[in-house]
Structure formats: C-alpha cells, structure tokens
Image (cartoon, rainbow, N blue to C red; front, side, top):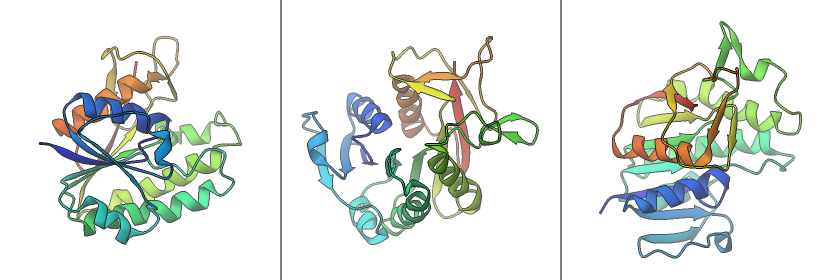
Length: 216
C-alpha cells in the first residue's frame, strides 16, 4: 500500500489534503500538535502527536516512507510565526532527508509569486499586516533554502492568492512562478481543488526541485 507522512494534517489545508489522500487509498501517518482535532476514522490512518521542530523527531516519523507532505503552519495568530517558520522548516527538511524520504511536498504560499516582472505578491501591499510575518518567512525559506536543496526531490506548491472552502471542481490551471488570475484579475482556488492537485503530484510527479502554482 502507498504510504505518506502528512505534517499539519489538522489545519485548514492539511485537513483537505488528509481527506483527499485517504480517498486515494493511501496509508497516512498524520502528524499533528493536537490529535483531538482529527475527527476522521479510517483504517489507513494513524494519528501521531509530535513536535516537528526537531529534525530527529521528523526523521523517526518518516522512516520507511518515500514521501512527506508538509502543511506545517505555526498558526496565523501566533505572534512568533515569522521566527518559528524559519526555525521549524529547516528541521522538517533535514528530518525528511535523514529519515530517507525521497520526496518532500510543501504547502507553499502565494507571497513569492510574481504579479509583474520583478514584482511579487508580497511587494504589492495587498497582504494584511497580521499575516505578513508568516507570508514573508515561508517565502524566505523557499527562496533562501529550498531553491538550493539538491538532496531530496522537493516541490513547493503555491496556492492562488485566495484559497477558500469550496468544491472539488478539477477545473483549474497550473503554472510555475506567476500568480494565476482569472478574466477579472482575481486569483482564487478552493482548498479542495488545491488538495486534488497536490495529491495528483504525489501520485504522478510532474515537478522536481521547483515551485508550481494553481488558480482558476
């Protein structure tokens, strides 16, 4: 049976990924801070409470697993989310490698996508002050660390500018480094379609050592 470790499985994106990957018949190790938030009961699901800020903990979790999906987020209301993201994500990366995982699929952010030549989303002033720290730190991890990573086959999957609870339509477009917008100039994706595209990538890899993105 196919097996995957899903970090942050109880969050907004993580829970959608958990539903999608279980529906595809994977055996899933769901790694969370608060196991009681996982309401799903499934024979293929193992829920583990763990602190992923330690690479050794992550390495032990991923042993025997080819793929890791990380939807880690320190919490948008966490006042230290900037520092925590930059502290924890390198540990997740190191742990995945030390544990022998072949692939690391990361729930990225839209902040580093381009809206024009030499202008990224994070430079537009459109991101609210209360979450800008998390957006910047995840973007810095991608630009300063992931883009130089050669040992593990990673992908950084950036959502559209607005990701929301909706329907699994499968009617979306994929791209690389530019924000995808519709005819109205809006950038949207449902979390269900995002999850579908992520698990498609898990099952049939199309991207290697790069970022890709999604939108309607």
